[in-house]
Amino acid sequence: MKRKIININEDLCIGCGNCVTGCHQGALEIIDGKARLVRKDFCDGLGRCIGSCPTGALSIEEVEMDKKENKTACSCPGSMIIDRKEETKRSVSSNVGGQAIPSELRQWPVQLHLVNPEASYFKDAETAVISTCSPVASADIHWRFIRGRAVVVACPKLDRTENYAQKLADIFDTANTKKVLAVIMDVPCCKGLTELIKEAVTLSKNKGIKIEEHIVKLNGDI
Image (cartoon, rainbow, N blue to C red; front, side, top):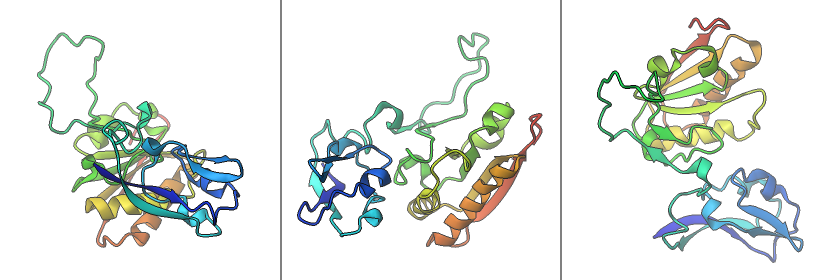
């Protein structure tokens, strides 16, 4: 099966390392003064690293991957795509086992750095962009905001957010997103997540996206 990955022109590469920093998947390394694609299976083919290259040494190419390499855009366990929307709904049972309150999450991964904009769970779905702290502060996050939606989780204060707006825009474009929910904490820094969503909507070619902001109080009230 063919898949898009990064191609490196070694004649143009000066070994500056900008692409390594720009690759959040850990697919690139500097070896002997040149950038190398050390893990094809980690490369998501989105080309975030290309814009950081000062010499134009990076490009996207389509290559034939074997089954092992192609099993996911990023095959590290934390990034394996899981889409549960086709699963049979849970039956109600008094025997809850190790899960007293069923999770409404139907996908994996959820961290914005790790999600693939082309993942099936984004397609034609409402997307909830949830601050990292919100699900800890409120037990209602799952049934109110995660149920039936695609989800990404991010922290505007502690994450490296320089690529977040563009990645969200890529999701909106690829998935034909019509509505985005910003679920943030009632603290000043968290407002930055809503601003990133607004920037993404501006960057997106998908016009008419509706944004809703929901604020979680420190006591859990929404």
